[in-house]
Image 1 (cartoon, rainbow, N blue to C red):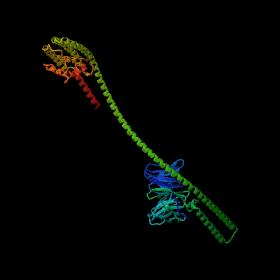
Image 2 (image 1 turned 90 degrees about the vertical axis):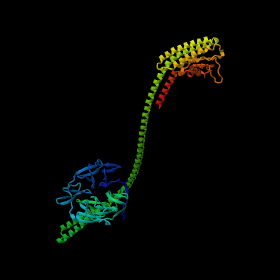
Image 3 (image 1 turned 60 degrees about the horizontal axis):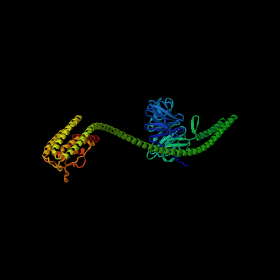
Image 4 (image 1 turned 120 degrees about the vertical axis):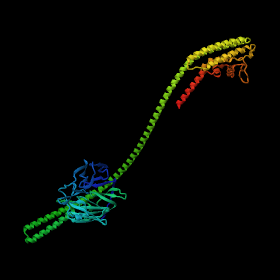
Length: 617
């Protein structure tokens, strides 16, 4: 007979999780580390129980329920397909009772110690512990099984477990410390598991069956349902795994209950065979004792024999039915194994899909978080850029407003100057006509130069007078544009005219070819007429034909002798001009008599340029 078990792996248990299977096959998952949790699995869904407040402890299973407790209260949990996990409060914990793992309690009552289950009445139910305290000192109460108390004696040197009957309802199992016990009320078997071996004790005969071996390291037995054993196994890294294996036929539980007593079918048949022999012995004794084989006795004996034969036939039929049931169980077992393999494959495939889905979700989550951080950063940059652009826009608008005001002021000033320019243009035209007349007069009266000079002086005086009036008028129009240097130029003109008059008197017979150029005062007066064009306005052309020969080397006009310093300066200022070609009045003004108004405008423009440059910086 092959006594090895072939286990299949169902699932890897999470850290801190312990499983327990109740009689109808439901597996409860108890997470004993904080936060504690109780749940079952249905179609890969976890159904959790609502635990009460406080610290909760799980004490084990009995029947179809799981029993738990707190420091002061007792609870029961059962699974229902309709309502899920039903959590029920049983009662308050008594002060003098002790709770044991396995779902039972002990309490001293009426001078005696009783053991009872957590779901029973602590005042009436229980099994008396009729063992002396001295004996119990070295024993540990571990199980209540079919009205018996199972104590454990630890022996690290024990090769295999052994059993001893102290009382009719007290058994002591000696075993190694790391071994664990498992038993259920529907079976007379007590399982001792540890390492790679399972020892099975028949509590009716107190005999061990052949050990069951496996290649996995057993931690504990979770339950037995439909001849399938469910265990927790461990590996070298302290990982716990749920595994299942079918039990051999000899280890399948087949029990019968008669008059409240549960026994195996074999024990039941054996017991009735003993009864049949006992009844035969009783009949023989009765016949020998009476010495008279009466008819009544014969009838009674025949009736008893018929009864025994009927019972024997019923037992034979029951045994035959048992064989059929065992055969059907084997077929069901094969189907269950096949279904279990398919289910296992589905579970593995689903677990793989879950892992892949979780990985995809983690990747998507990481990518989404990265994108959110990038968008937040870009949004901050965009907000900052917007603030900077708004500041620059406000600054640009302010600068444009200032520039607009400045241009408006310049436009107003240019309009005023344009009005003055029109008047000055008229005066220049008059001067040009005078110049033509003077030139013609000089040519006609070259031999009477004194008369002509006096006439020229007179005309120049008139021009000076007109310039003075015009200057006063312009000054009144531009009070902020006073030109102090113009008075000096007028005085210079007067001095030049005086000196020129004296000089002309001493040169009455000068030939036409030896005539000096037009007096500098004339040029200065003409230049003063167009001082308003220094800002760049278009000025009319004044064409002068100089009667004085030009030095081909220096290309300059020789200055007359005996000129005053003022005349010398004015002549020198005009010495670089050649009057044989047409020349604009504006050019003469820039070279001979720089206008204060032009300087003022240049200073104003330079100040505005400097202000614009500072604004741009």
